[in-house]
Image: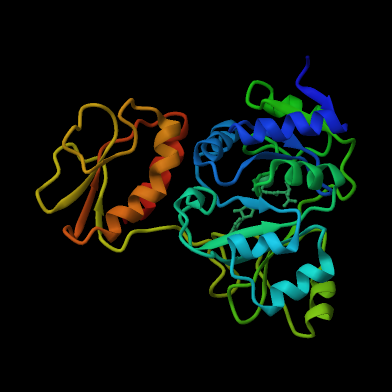
Length: 314
Ligand code: TXA
Ligand code: MG
């Protein structure tokens, strides 16, 4: 059996089973193909980052099949509910406040207190989400630094060896990614232009919508920086011998005294899955006012982990 499977009912069911046991499934949406995993399974989400070969952790979009699912993950305001009723299913993604700090969603949210959700219009995507019974976290199904794929063949070229299954639903109708709109601020801000236009959004909301230049590191107006998670406490990295007043997060078997260990066996995927959860737990720990973390090797997912902890330790 090849990796590419026609998206018929039996294969969508297989794909849903793969999602439920922590696998990675590429699937069509109306915009581009997504690389999906169970959003609640942090190990599966870690494999998305591994498969993408992204040297950093970006928050991922959680794909849902019903407007009602939005309130399980996020705290949608009237604006979000209104836009969802008008544009969903469709190429519009919301950044919203997270519902609670469910730690299984920490990696999907890259440790942030926001969550990004969208209800795609493609029948195969909707059926896959419904059959899986969970929100599906998915970035575009391409290796980092390559084009977003709009056919199953393009996914195969980019992801072969890194995906359990590719559901072929034919070429994507829209071909560009969804519009991302930040609804955590009083004025809505478009973070990425896409399938739904600024004019359509302004007309629907009856007010001005701000627009960022699409580069989260070079905002055109304040408040548009892609925020990075950082603990409130003083945080040291590459620490082999922590001091007594530091809450110590280890990595590997050589730190039996660590308060938490990202992975005793030195598995980077396991470490990625725990990273944001453990940083937050360390931050909340009342008996220590400092945090230290053991060195993380600089390869594979270690690149993304080091990128994040370097930013957090500044
Ligand atoms: O059309 C699409 O949106 C496709 C299909 C598969 O749904 N998905 C997609 O995902 O393009 P991805 O991960 O390739 O792009 C999502 C972008 C990333 O650049 C990420 O940094 C940004 O959205 N993003 C996600 N959550 C964010 C947040 N809370 N704040 C700011 N930017 C966010
Ligand atoms: Mg992408």
